[in-house]
Length: 270
Image (cartoon, rainbow, N blue to C red; front, side):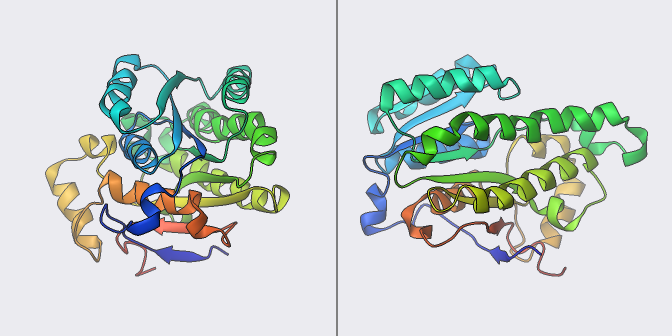
């Protein structure tokens, strides 16, 4: 049974001491050049964190993020293929040697293919499903395995996985993604037991957020989605990132093994 919370976050929420809540901490964002990932990197840098983020292929975009935020704090981009465990080990060893610790890890990477999202479940092959699992679940597994020891010897330490609300309640599209993200959530909830008490593990389940997937939809579909959401709009990347930052931070120091839903109330009717 999932414990479900609904939240909305904005740049104005974090006041007072929260503005430097990550000071002296080392944070790693896997998939930090995507929409929500970039917003999270921005928050962490603003709030005093030594921030490393990974990118898979688009070095130019990653460099642009570094240049944009360099004046706000410590930031670095590192290339990582999350589907390659040895590559994850390489990055873990690099961070261990350079920083000696890792306090916060957020795993946001994922495969992005419109054809797999829009296809009917039975028109896809098992190989199509396994390809999404290889990236979304396999990448999460590789990263957690590679960074587990570094997290466990750091204090405090927290890990946030990314799932989705359709993965929790079902949908009529995106079957490979729903299955893979449900697997990530289940695995992360189990990790909350095995990594406790040294590492807190939580899951942010994102609903409709203004990221690349919006480009796959026509205007009529977008309006239908908005109408189904109690708040009547699509969420901003910064709003999703604020929820992830909360789960990483000491503000959630007595929370582990939980699913925080960030969807404007879209799953309330269920």
